[in-house]
Amino acid sequence: MKKIYTLFVIIILSAVSLFAQAESQQTEQSSVQTRESEDAASIAGMPSQELWDLGNESFTQGKYESSLNYYTEIEKRGYASWPLFYNIANSHFKLGNRGKSILYYERALRLNPSEGDIQNNLRHAKQFTVDKIEELPEFILKTWIRDINYKLSSDTWVTISLVLFVLVALLLLNFRYGPSPRARKLSFFASMLSLLIGIGVTLFAWNQRNAYHKVDEAVIMMPVSTVRSSPDMSGTTLFILHEGTKATIIEGFGKWRRIELADGRQGWIASEDIELI
Image (cartoon, rainbow, N blue to C red; front, side, top):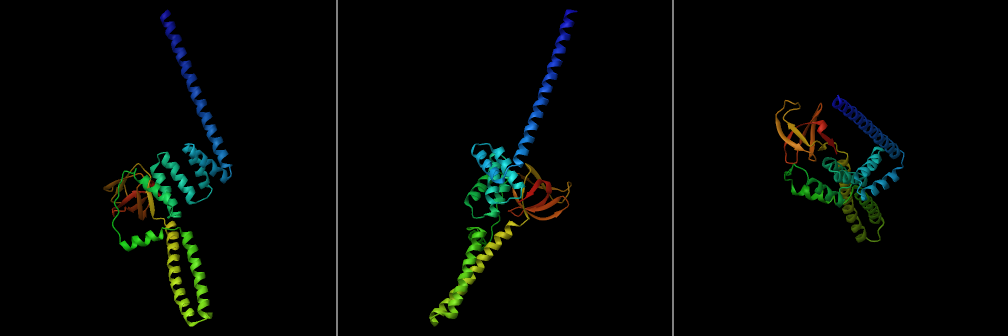
């Protein structure tokens, strides 16, 4: 009888202990949720400049989750700049979010293709991707022109073009009212040369602006994604892609997108597996 009583007491105490632990966990979870809600409300009420400063401070202190929250809140408010996307990418990279980091490096690079830090960090992030895509060779002149185009930002090219067009106007004035036939002749040829260069520079700026607004490039967001021969689950598996791989979107059909890789391979992938740059 005594053993039964002891066993009964042990069972009761165990039940009480389990109940207390459950209550403690529930209270702790509730407290965490309350703190998170308060933090979210606090962040939402901060000025953007303060969020930027706190994000930078958190990043330097190694608090990458916090820095990402601050930067993301700025993005939610409609701000878009290459330093913002660059910092978001850096935070994602430190947190191990390879796909997101590459996505935001690409977005930052669209806004400032000439920034060396973005190019270097993007190149470094791609080293951690599973898929190693070898790009098809392209015409050397096209590569050469693109390299020149991306030496400077679109804003810089616009500034140069404006200076050149003003120079064209001044040279034409000198051509009209120059003191000698030789000076007028030189002014005419110089104005034509400046005009041609100005047009080329304007095309560089336009090309960069146009590239920024393109919606036909995406990054794989899923750890593993299947590319199929047709836009349905019954399609034959062509190949597998992994997080962080960049692809060009050719067309869409419902919740599927036909993509092309840099090496020329094509196939259909679920739209939820990718995110537009």
